[in-house]
Amino acid sequence: MAQDCVDRALAEHKGDVVATYPCRTYKLRLIGSQDPRFPSWHADSSLRVKKMAMELHREYAVDMDDATHLATTYGALAPAVCEFGKKTDSLNPLLPNQSYLRTEVLVACDQEMAESVIDVIANRTRMAFVDPVGTLAILPDIVKAIGDRKGWNTAKREAEDAEARDFLAKMAYGNQPAHERNSDMKRRRAYRDFPTTEETKVED
Image: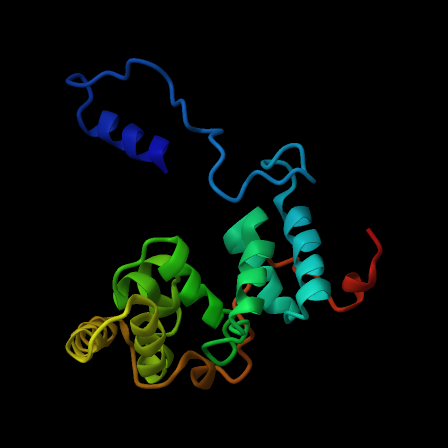
């Protein structure tokens, strides 16, 4: 994205601005990409996701759809997220037919410097975009989880709740949760070739 942004700026101001050197962050590894089991993080990402999802499913009894979501979202840090979820008893989904887990809310607060409800539902996770109506329905639970983690008083919780409701009202289209709009809707998957139940039985 950094390269795309700079390239666009150069195109918009062609003749006035010139790049001093080519993009230097194209192969920069982000947090979660350093997995010792795979020498190159850029090679065959679907295979890495499958392998990681299988491990999470076996080790933490996480649903395969949820495991795939965690592997895709957190990369090599997914096992640590599951371990955190196990300790906090929060490895359960927040939304019907969506793979956003309660532990992700806690991780956002404890490890990703999230400071508001909107920060969690829109920036650290994407649940506000994927299912704004469903997110609104469970908003009190989210506010409580974040408020307890942050030590918010009643006034702060009410303010965060109101601000999040206003935000979600602008995001919603219709008044049905995503899983009710489409009865055949399956949980969120970032890869089409996610592991099947049979694949989880494959030995390493």
